Image (cartoon, helix red, strand yellow):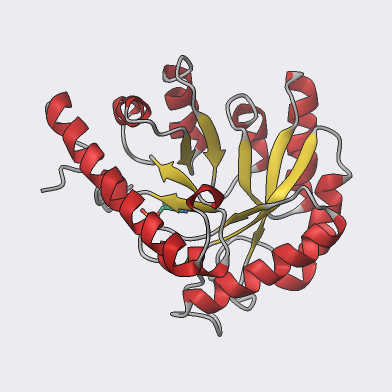
Length: 247
Ligand SMILES: *Cc1c(COP(=O)(O)O)cnc(C)c1O
């Protein structure tokens, strides 16, 4: 059923995306109801990585306002192509410092801030670009510091990174983000990781009350994330279809 990158006839693709979105919206509604949370507390961020700008355009026509990308090489031309659309762009991938200047041209939020060198590079890029503040989230790693672990800072260093972002010109601390760990003690238990993320968010908000974003949950675990308090779920596959293995 899914055609991956071959978008097919636009009308057919539009219907696929409409159906994918409807399914995800129903899942979010149900998860909010189960958690006793108002639907308005959760923002759907559609992860469009590996899919063409034409899909982003169709999604915008269906009412999507938040989109995410994880590679600047793909995101920069796509954002330029879609510059006429009322979209909020989220950057969610590992970010090299030499890409900072490109990313700040289109991104409203970077979810993957995890080291002081990246904080400096983003700040410098924002000031050079003379753009408004860039929203930054601290990416938290729950994989126990293994070499193969995901990007992110260990839980005990999040407050320090949050303070650094908040004190850096051109940057605004928006909150915290995680990806359910593939290694370490919380592997296979996204609920535990998302609950710890919510606790970390509470601690961060004690000194930074405006840093309210809790970015957690993807196609496979958005229910657990919403139950634990996520404010932003990042969903790709369940809306757009399975990505090709190379994506
Ligand atoms: C790709 C990606 C997602 C979306 O994953 P799906 O399983 O396709 O929903 C979410 N977050 C990040 C950081 C990603 O790279």
